[in-house]
Length: 236
Image (cartoon, rainbow, N blue to C red; front, side, top):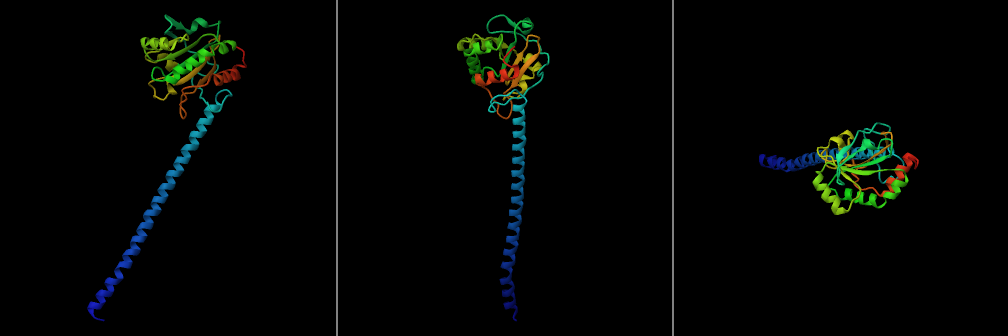
């Protein structure tokens, strides 16, 4: 065989070898991509189940109610002494929780503040059905936010609130109730936390709705009442 023909034959044999090598390389890349995708899918599914478990656990930690509004129970929790609240109020003067010891249960509502219209809608809804809370034996209902008194006083006036809103500027009281652990804004603001303090100063019911994964910022009054009744038996 001449040298020319041999070179031609060798040149003709080369492309298939390269093609096979390219195909092997592509299969390797595809296999690697497939494994990576599988790892991502497993991780996502795992996170979903962890989140679902946490979510359902938060709902079970509270009283029975609508499963669409699960909540956690922060610290201090049920049966623990409620830290005192003595803060300036939009209604004038200050609100002192200790002054209701031995008199009436008090419902505290920690909320995000001026930037959260659903939170103000929550006060509007509670105020509209305030008689139903009274029927359970609940005395004062007050809301607490970390916003300045002047700004929330104007907001309360604009909204026509009779329910006092307390200014916890700096978040000292909110932190004694760990209320800033359940918001959308990290530790900057409160979430959506209700605490029912009994006549003996101990916590009868607590619901932290504002945390992950739902970040609930409004709870229908009938859901609140149902969960309160389930916890207290409808008698205070």
